[in-house]
Image (cartoon, rainbow, N blue to C red; front, side, top):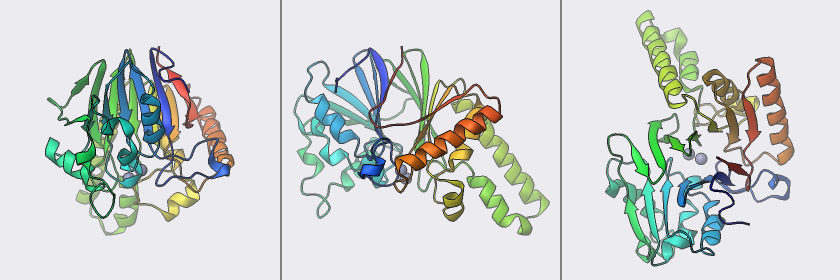
Length: 307
Ligand SMILES: [Zn+2]
Ligand SMILES: [Zn+2]
C-alpha cells in the first residue's frame, strides 16, 4: 500500500460499527472499527482511533516525510479508541501526536484517552508513549491544523459525542460516525399521548432548531460520512441506542444537498451482501427522490482523491 497516494485524499481504514468483524463474509466492506485518514499537503489528520488506526500506524513507520499528525476523536467508546494502544508512532521518539475530542480541558481529554491503558486493562500505560503528545483545545470554536480548518458539533449518541466539519483543499468533509437521526422523533412518538400543547410546541421548536443547525454543519458539504448502522427491522429493536437506520441517513443527506454520501459505521453482524443490498436500496430511494446526490458504501482501503 502506498503511504501518500495523492497530494490530497481521504482514505478509509475502519468502517465497522461497535466491534471489529474480521469474518471472511465481511471483508469486501472491511472488519476494522472507525478510522479515516485525511491527508493534504504534507499534513495528516485522522478521524477516530478504532482498530483501523493500527495498520495506518504501521504504514506511517515506513516513510520519512512526516513526523507529526493529529487525531480527532468523536467520543470515547471502545470502537473509537481501541486502536490507540497499538498505534506505533505514539511510542516512537521524534513523532508528535496531537489529540482532540470531547472534554472541557486538555486534561479531561488526556484522562479519557489514558484510562483504557491503565492496569489491569492494558500492560503498559500512556507514559510509554515516547512521542511528544499534545491534547488540543479549540480556539473560539475552531481548530486550525496546517491546511485543515475544523469545527465540531454535538450529535445524538450516548454521552457527549462530536461530529466534525473539516475544510481542506477546497473541499468540505463532514464526519459523523455515530448519530441517531430519529432520536427526537422517537421521543415524541413514545410520549405524544401524555404531552400537552405547550410541550408539543417546545419539542417542535427543538426539532426546527436541530434542522437549522444540521443544515448549517452540512452547508455545501462535498463529502458526508455518516452512521448507517441498521436496517429498518433492527432499528425498531434498537431505538435509543444512538445509531441510525440507513434510510434516515440517506433522506437526511439528500435533504441537506450533500454531494457524496458514504454509508459508515455499518453493523458488525451484516455481511458484505447485506450491505450491498442496503446500498442498492439507498440508490433506489435517491433515484425516486430525483436527488443528484451520489451514495457509496464506505469500504476499508478505498481512497478518495480531494483534488
Ligand atoms: Zn461507534
Ligand atoms: Zn459510540
